[in-house]
Amino acid sequence: MATQTTQIGKNQYDYLTNMAAGKAAAGGAANAGQQKWAAGQLKSSTYTPPAAQATTPAVKPTMGTGVFNAMTAGANAAKSGATPTPAATAAATTMATQYSPTKSTLNTLQTAINTPFSYDINTDPAYQAALALAKQNISQQQSDTNAQLRATGQGKSSYSETVANQIGTKEMGRISTEVVPTLMQQAYQRNQDQIANNGNLYSLQNQEYFQNPITESAVTGNYMSGEARNAIDQLLSLKQQAETKGITAEARSGLSSQADQIRAFLQSQGINPELFGANVSANTATSNIGQAGTRTLQGQQTDLQNKQANWNAYTDTVDRSGTWGAGPAQNWGNLIANANAGNQTMTGQQNASGLMSEQQNRDINTRNAAITEWQTVGTATPSVAEILGVPVGTPTSDQAYRDASTALEQDKFTYSQWSDAANAAGKANSTATQTVSAATAGDMLSAALQKVVGTDTDTGKTKYGVYSDPAKREEAFVTMINTTGLRGNDVITALTKAGYSIKEINALQAQYPEVFQ
Image 1 (cartoon, rainbow, N blue to C red):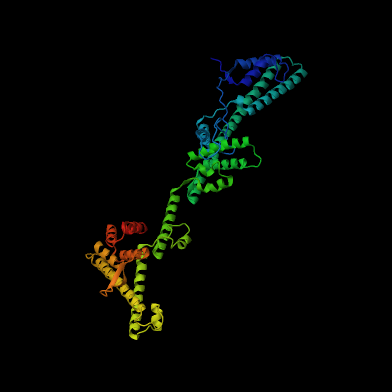
Image 2 (image 1 turned 135 degrees about the vertical axis):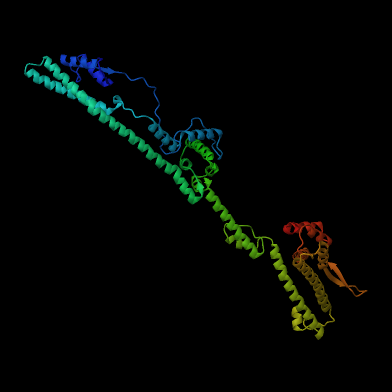
């Protein structure tokens, strides 16, 4: 039958080898019995030296401040401006690749889970301590036993050697059967605890770097990754250091180089680095944090709703004021303040024209009654004088009477022309078959521009001229547009027929572009 051997570790092997050579554990000399026992243990044991392992550099965690503790050497960023240099961009890429807290923790956790548990007593400090204690116990027990046997005259007998062997075998057996399994179980538990700790760490980092930014984005409408926020915090810290009174130019240059690398990383994350540029103070950069990040879909929807609300408020103000104002505004109070800042809308022009027509009608009726009263009485009464602006008692034979009568007839003629055009336009809108042509509108506009300039001395007939006052000609144009509804090229045709120059037409087109479209 083949002899069965026991696998032992290096410490056990060294212990037995030394004792077989006559060296005791406490530094003394081993007796013959101890030497014989150790030699027997070596014959029934096997020791296999461990295979040489390649040295793996220790991985240094970069938790620290949480932001880019390692910088790429030789990356010199621009000392001014906000646009990162190529070197800074490359450094930022390296930093972003090397540093990701959640990824690093997840890789560590995955490696620990996938690596089978192993236990080496030679590297366990607890085993070394237990082995050292066992050696002391063996030596002490053997010494005590030898003393007792010497007292009975058996100190050098074979029996003493047998007892010594039994003490060593019993103690080493206890180490193998009791201590090692306990230490192995403790090591296994530490391994499981480490895995659990890494799992808890990953959960915390996932909450900090992923879940919290998502929760915050639901409130602010902006999403910013945890890494980007930490980068901004470090950048603000660098700015505060750079703004410290008494800092040297060399120190500030070093801070600037680090800041440029971080700005390059922020740009790679879709964040505008100019918000935190070299020319931006720490206080201003802090206030710019709210503008950083990526607008979420919910944030974009909120922006759209805000713009729509501003537009609705603006159009409501336009409808009520009849003018285009100064455009939509975030502060709705400005809509009221700027209500009369723009040109009149077509509705506003029509309303103004309607009010003007009513006023003209009342004015003509009042002046007509005053002329009739003046003609009947023969002189201007106080009421006639107040209405027509002539001295009380002025006779009808005075030139003032003839001028007032001529002006009244002119205004009656103009008003009748526009009334006819308005009626024609109204019929066109109601029947959808009758329309006012551009030529007809041009004739009416030409007639509206006529004014009485005097009386022909030979024939006694009234002489007419044309209004040249730009304001009067623009007023006639607006009235024509409101009463006829002409648009586009028809407007140009009517203006041309009424005698408007190209310069006048261009000026009106610039002021009222909607009617020329």
